[in-house]
Length: 118
Image 1 (cartoon, helix red, strand yellow):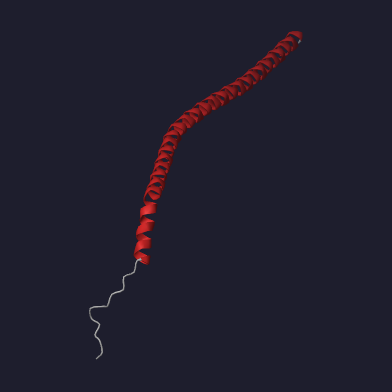
Image 2 (cartoon, rainbow, N blue to C red; image 1 turned 60 degrees about the vertical axis):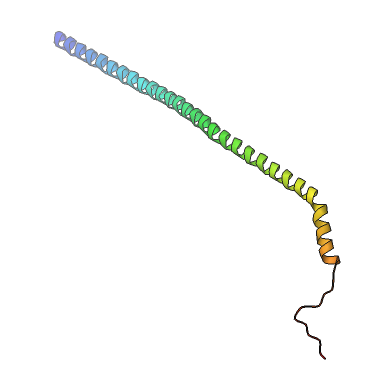
């Protein structure tokens, strides 16, 4: 009976070792899954940062060209205002003289359809 109890004892020890190995394998699997998740998160973050950087570059290029366009429009507007102001100052005196002469220099005349009452 001792050999039978020794065999049972060996079986129990083998079963215990198998459980320990299973537990160890589960721990390694959990650890590896956690590590894989961290690596995937890091890769996703890196990809996201790269895409955001590309987006900002494209946005800067587009907005930069719009900025140049608005600068050109501003420059054209300023030039137009400068030209109009220059033209105003150049022609103001002669136009004032023409207006005043038209208003002040009145020459009374009898209308051609007027008839004298006799």
